[in-house]
Amino acid sequence: MRKQLNYDELLHTMRLSNSDDPFNRGTLLLTLVHEVMEEKSLNKQDFIFTQYDEGYILITQVNT
Image 1 (cartoon, rainbow, N blue to C red):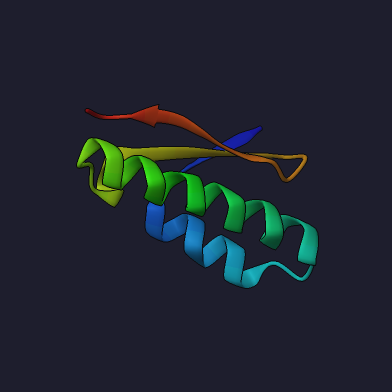
Image 2: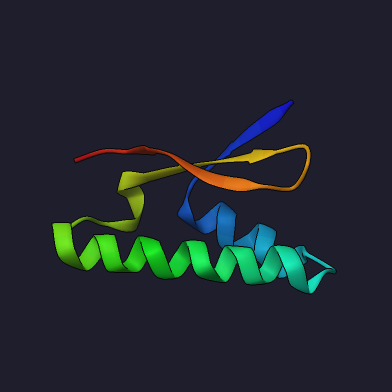
C-alpha cells in the first residue's frame, strides 16, 4: 500500500518520524524539491509525493 502526500503532509510525516534515517532522506528530498522550485519557478503545491509501506518517499508527480 502507498499513500499520496502533498508538500505539507510530507513535512508533517517527517516531523512524526522517530528515526533519523527517514528524516535524513526527507531532508535530502526537500532540498532537491527546493532546488527544482527555484530552477523551474514552481511552487510547493506543484509536487506530489508517494510514501510506500517500506517508508520510502518519492516524488511521483510534478505539475509544470
